[in-house]
Image (cartoon, rainbow, N blue to C red; front, side, top):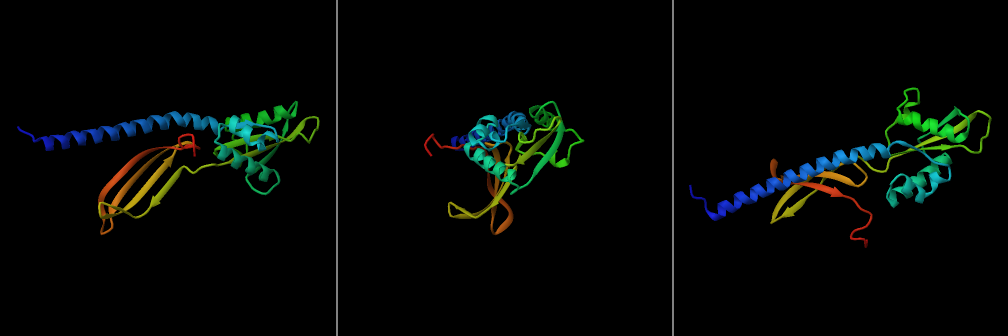
Length: 215
């Protein structure tokens, strides 16, 4: 059977596209699995002092946050400490000292202790436990729990585009599975025949604070 060079080239191109799609899917799946463990660790409660919880540099280093997210979290904690925003939980704990009281609460949150309030066990990007050092009773200490979300897990989009003189409607769905990684799938529809798919895209997205270390 003779196959023309043009046909043979199309077959090779199609195979290359299939391989590229499979590689992207495999890389995305691997990255998803790899980062899920990291995300779970980042979501665990961290014990900080009241001052540390509002210091963006400490938040950036201790919680492995970007500068922008550290700024957002520091601002959130400051507002929550003054009662301007919610959620915030307070606990009175019996312990030898205030530091151990905070560590007890953090350990119970990380262990998903069912005796705690549901709001203290809610899944969040950041959970910070701070002791109240101003209260100094002999056995009972006040501990505050702050929860904050810096990003949304899912994003969707719809728009209008033109390619090679043809109009299309792009509909996209993006899954953010960590602070700086995402996968987006986009399908293009013919405006005249909404059920007709004219193309699509599958993208692996990496988020960064600076592009080429410049911007």
